[in-house]
Amino acid sequence: MFIKSHINFKFLEKPIFRFIIFATLIIISFPTFKFFDHFFQKIFGLNRYLHFFDLIFFSFLAFCLYKKKRFQRYFSINLSLVILYIILMRLSILFSNGELHHRAFNDLFKTTFMILLFSIFLTKNFEKNQKMIIKCFLFVFFSIALFETIVGIEQFLLQRPLGFTFLKEPIFGHEFGSSAKILLPSKLNFLTQFIPSQKGELIRAHGTFIHPNIFAGFLNISTLLSLYQLYKAKKRFFFSLFLFLQMSALILTFSRAALAAFILSASIFFLLMVLKKYDVKKMGLVFLSLLIILTAFFSSFLIERGLVGNLFKSTRAKMLDISSNNTRNSLKKVSVNMIKKHPYFGVGYRNFLIKRDEYFIEKTQRAYVHNIYLLIASQTGLFSLFVFLLLLTKMFKDTFEFSLNPLTITCLCITISFLLIGFFDHYPISTHFGNMVFFACLGFLNYSIRISKHPAYSQRAFLYQ
Image (cartoon, rainbow, N blue to C red; front, side, top):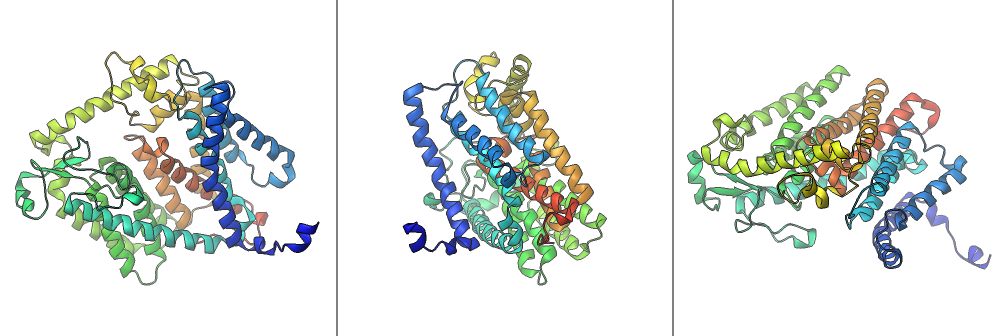
């Protein structure tokens, strides 16, 4: 009573302070989990039957059931599918054989936060302050994107890191054996006077990401959001220039999957905007002009990289790709063998890396299979893959039926872009960055669907169109 009477808690009513407290709890939760996780391991060992993660996860679900009236507004079929997806990940560890990956439970704890990310869009604070929150997010995101774009372009021109180690910029160079290189086309040998190279090889743009492919995934998101801002903006010169820089940086990653996914998802963006009768003629011409100019300017690089097929590539470029292609094919065979032997719950979440050699006659590179659908099925089983695809199918169907506006179309295209990349790479699912992109987009789509289906859900709800 003394504390309540002497401390004023009214500041908690302000959204900014609530956000600061929420963000602080999120930040400290991961090291706290790691500390208690290690403590738990010392007592019980790495136990697939009982783990510290289980105490947290099932306590949270029990609390939600106990406070059913307070939390019932968050629950829906879509959220239930997300929770079921997490539970199947946990069951895959329970039914796995042999050694467990030492990071399995730690990564599972991080993935569980996707439930929170998915449902945060249904909170009253988001409803009340939706316009302000989205504006703040876009401002922060585009500030980061501008920095990353400039860093990526400079890295390619200078062929070295820029020294942003405190931002986790990777150390790379010609002395490191890496797949993150391309060949300089013979007709462009004169560029060696301006761009440092080694034996005709150039290092692809990384940004502050560990690999150019992941950097390309980030640029896919930012470029699609720039298309949305280009539609919204009254003065479009700045975003046209920004779009030009982002597309240039995206090309300099030379990520074939990301480039193809961006062109397809951007095409879907314009198609859906036209179908919903939004005026995108001018911005469509701007986008098409930039695409033609950049494609023509970098055509020699793109041909050598194999963007138009292997027929036009040089012999040396084909030889450079052989090792990478062999690795990818071997890992695909490993995943298929895992699914055949463990179809229901897979070999265990995060266990692909440590069990891959058990499912192939030759030793394979320490990497995930470059296909998110095979990765989900091989690690957590066909049930888990079915739930994942069911969630996406239901979300897409409801969005098309109830909630197509410029922002939801953009979120939809970002999700489609990552799903397309997922046929050729694993980071949309294997990294925390990829999971955040997926579930943030799906969470916002879920919110948009809900208020479109039930306008009385919130009188204050306002879609930022």
